[in-house]
Length: 225
Image 1 (cartoon, one colour):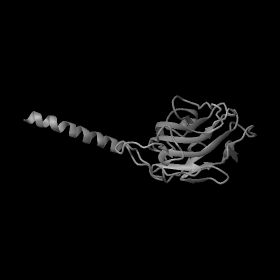
Image 2: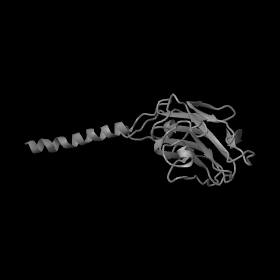
Image 3: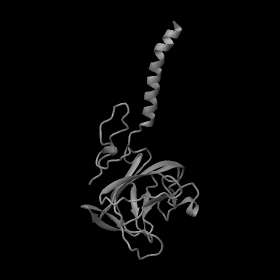
């Protein structure tokens, strides 16, 4: 009898356990609480994420395929490489060891041979980890394909994000490393994993319905086009 009860109850406990695991993993996206954003243009608009202009990171407003954005122009007339810097509000996050995702909306042009993302980390790397490459490997790069369309790329930071403003006063930057201009429209910084592929035009990037129990969330919020 006891064995029969155990057999009957086990699937129920397994189901409850699975739902609990999913619930813990499926943290709801909340702007200003676990993700930030910025929309670049003639006048940037955003939430707790700012784009910083400085000596080796001078940008200018531009329009690509009808979208107002910011451009890292080329040729660059200053010393070193040209970068696009971003700073996370210290009231949201500063210091520590963080897992994070950076979602970059970029114009896919062969004018830039590569785009990379560097961030302030606790790991080894240039200037004591203040410019560590995001993603896989020491300095991974995105190779544009030349579709001449706006696309999205997600950079992953695995538990060593320091974000203490040590990247020349900022927390992360994008760069083509002097190999042509880059155009960036919108950027999201998130402490929870975004869907991949990410659709910037719908809440939390989710483009199709999912099962209610498996649903991560649908409240990223629509950031304007």
